[in-house]
Length: 140
Length: 420
Image 1 (tube, helix red, strand yellow):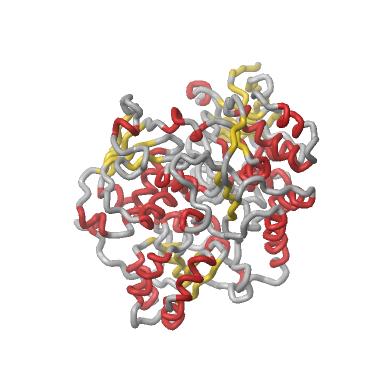
Image 2 (spheres, one colour):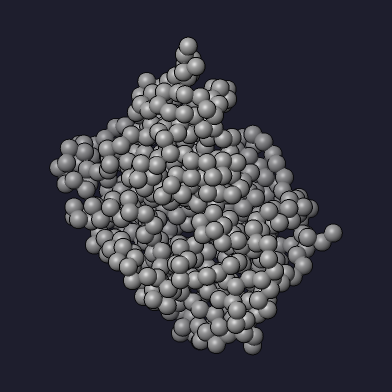
């Protein structure tokens, strides 16, 4: 069985993976270890969990403008999230995947959802994020 | 996006591969945020100047090696290290070449080697209403909110792309309509003596950032007597806890002299309050250190100003830093030259305080220094210290930091918001 959620394309691309959800914003710089992809902010509810290969679901980004650089490095060492799902995507967060596309030719799609749709995603679900087609497919 | 023929030509590679990459990144960002076109900026400030990861070095070196040059005056954020006295800072000779290569790549692209995270303190200071492309979260929040210049929160690598093209997508905080405040934050129950304690400003900023997150907020109740450095600490805190690009301080922010100006004639979507009790709770939360002993005091996050050095010299007057403590201050070469000139540098050195230039305290070479606990007057540093370096930290006013430095144990003067 499949369930489809409609969203808005922020950065195009297609990726599949396991969902990791947090209701807290994430700062990639100071919040994610660029060598391992582990959340290293002790105040974050995902502390010590890995974003690598995950469909990372969080409402919006926060913090330092170095976040994009950390995302590019995560992509370089293959520890980046497979895709990102937000309620709102701010420029710093979008920059990492955009530069990644033009520099390494790697896709990290980002899709944004309205709050109600955002609530439908749960940690552990297997999903396909098709940002190009503006849809997330939940595989049950 | 509507592009001019010249811009289309750049995307076709007519001005070289570096310009093609830079413009492709800007156009993609513009598409994401619904920009109709690109618009010129008159200056840029680059954030990705400290060597941290190889991906950043690869990107910047590639642009420089392709012959890219900055199209507008472009200042640079700190290097990770003191580029002159890196040996004294304990930087290993194995890693130094990477810092040096990154610095050289920016200089090759004709950026100005300012190496400071407080570009609003000296150099190419923007004017009210000026359209600019700045990186570095604290500088962005300061430029928008204190000076009234206009920049989005440009990320690392986007900023150098904007500097090379001399343009940005026309969206976000470049446009008046997006500078309208949505929420109102009222400071309730604060007294004059609370505002006389410098430590309140980074704490207030941090709380405002947490509440405002990525929304434009208006803060009512900041005293008109607030200083330049108070505002610096406030916005460094705000931009580290939230995605704050612009926060109107009513009566202080140039375009926010009244509530009506903040909300452009409409009503706030929500009204929230900050009380002294919240500041006290938050101050407690910011503290990750368990022990009583402190062996590293670090200030200058963002880079210290001449007035902050004057205050430090006044506080340390006649005292000496305890033998078990390292006391470091980070600043720009410009401010360093001033304090050297007027004798303050010698006064600080005699007291056992070391002043570094160019660098960032969060990037200190951990392998060379076996510090166990830090203390700082910066909410931004305290916020990132544990997660970035694994080192627990305490936050206090500069006076607390100096007392602690002299004794080697955490000393805190009673703060008015902590009185029971």
